[in-house]
Amino acid sequence: MLKEVTNKDNENVRKRSIEERLKAYPRLKERIESIINVVENSEGNIEKANEAEQRVIEELRQMGNDILHGWSENQSRKKEKEIKEKNKDVNIHSKKTLLVYDFRSNRGLRTDFYSQ
Picture 1 (tube, rainbow, N blue to C red):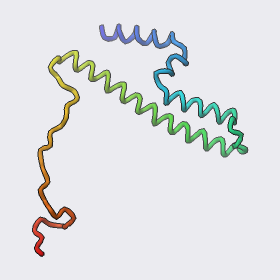
Picture 2 (picture 1 turned 90 degrees about the vertical axis):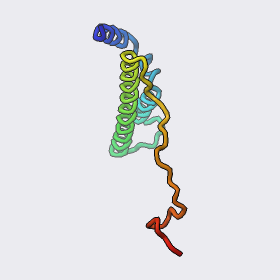
Picture 3 (picture 1 turned 60 degrees about the vertical axis):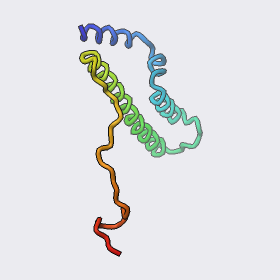
Picture 4 (picture 1 turned 135 degrees about the vertical axis):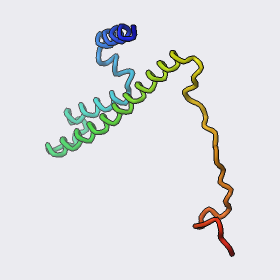
């Protein structure tokens, strides 16, 4: 059943235009627009192919980073949802309790056994 839902979701995603899909990913849309700006030389400051190449490479690196972050967030949300559906009692995010307290007064010194 999960595969059927996934296939239906994929078909719905494919039917939407790229602009509609990019609305969900504003950082990705910004990166694509930046690359188009390099191609069009909209700022008028790129005079050599080497400069254009460097700008495109940097934009692609940043885009790759944004894509991987978005992908990991999506995967995390999907797994969270799956776990919550399987186990209704599971609390995914909770504040961690501090197990150890540091009572040393001379934190900058090398040992706890400092004598004056």
